[in-house]
Image (cartoon, rainbow, N blue to C red; front, side, top):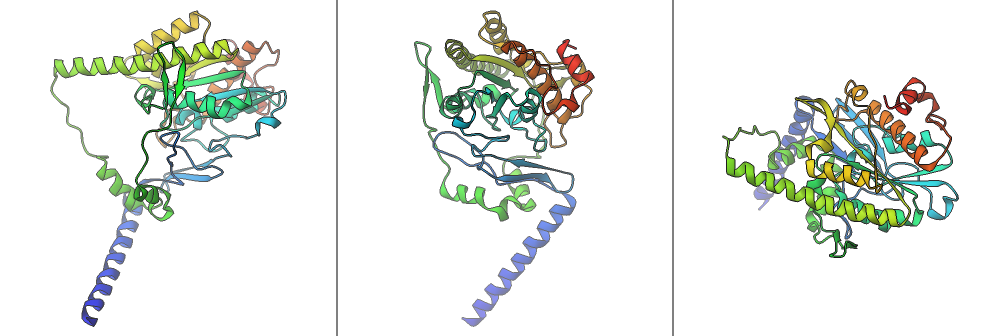
Length: 366
């Protein structure tokens, strides 16, 4: 019996040493992306972030960002609804671009927008990575509505149509919106793993998770298949139509409630055009946005593409780096001030030092 125990102890020590050596090797030669605290699930949404947390997102010594969340699990300043007073409230809805993944605290466009607009405004950042329009609409009416926003900024990116599939918001036959709890939850062991700082900070664990999920494997180009291409086109159209149905119902309801809706699209480099909106990849949604803009149900916020195409994206991988976020904030501020009838100029708020010639270019449409 003693020999069995001794062998088990030796084996345990050998395994521990092997894991430690493997962890060191991965950190030195193949550092992985780590983030902690990670996303958590809830009964209302597929994923959220921990509230009042300081999140570190990094790849070894290559890059590192800090995300500080407030009482709502979002970035940016927070005030209870009863303390907002007579400030004009802007609710920003979007995904990781609105949240600001890939830039440090204070650099995301929603946070910059608050500074540019000044003390007479309160910007509520509802951005959450991985969320589609169904989650964003539900969050607006369940969390942001008590702040009585006069303006909504809806940020669009390329994966939004696919992410709008959690079932938490639906459109009824009469065009009204209905809200539902999130239908599934993680097993207890997955929740434990998500909350384990030891595992989530481990480069070896991140590598194993990436391999298990297929990350890093080469993808062979499939030969042309007309039937598969036609099926993919139909599927793409269906997810666009699902997004449009929600967008139309949301825009109509906001209009009826006297809330101004601004629509802004993320941008990206393109092999053909050089630089364009993510919205351009989704013609059904793009047509709907143009139509709703013509009908006065939303305002599409044009961005200075020629200026933004020269900017450097985040080393984390998101297309927008600090310069993009600053430019988007200035452009949005110009649109919001014009819509509100304010005589203030972009750059008159806390971030006045960032304005100058750039703000003049934004105001003139350059």
